[in-house]
Length: 189
Image (cartoon, rainbow, N blue to C red; front, side):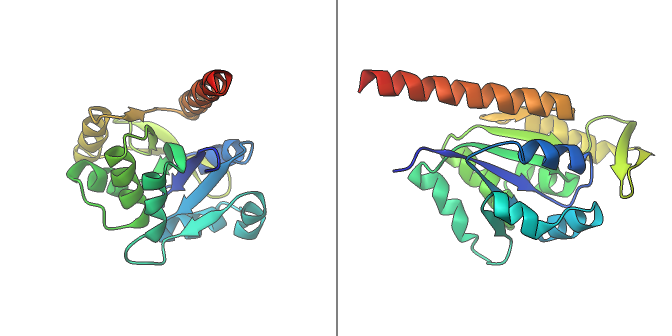
């Protein structure tokens, strides 16, 4: 088996998507999963999906059974990242609904005890976010959206981050941990 990779999913949120994608594109050994809405949002923010495809495998939400989720059962991934993720997907994950590619990936990661790092778009009652055209706007997440984010924090194998800097730190720390374990295993072989 090849060494495990990082799985990264994007949903239809534009919340600091440019910063998330720019960080993602610095990483090696990563597969990208896109919801249908993510494909639209990526284009709205000026990213070219074909250029991203040249850098990493890209899986799109095109099949009802989400076949790529089987990779978790084969030990293909060491970590699952959802960044940015909409309140809609957070709500599905909290309720255990796995009816889309991304919500199914989260469910299967949890069932396989693969750690998830989640950057929700709704993390505070008042917050700045990004809109297309490099604009910063204020948003006021609803109570139900904030409750979903809070509930997700209590899920096993799930780390919820609140900023791009926190996301970068969490992913960097996780990759360092994985690399350290790989080195320890290889020294014992």
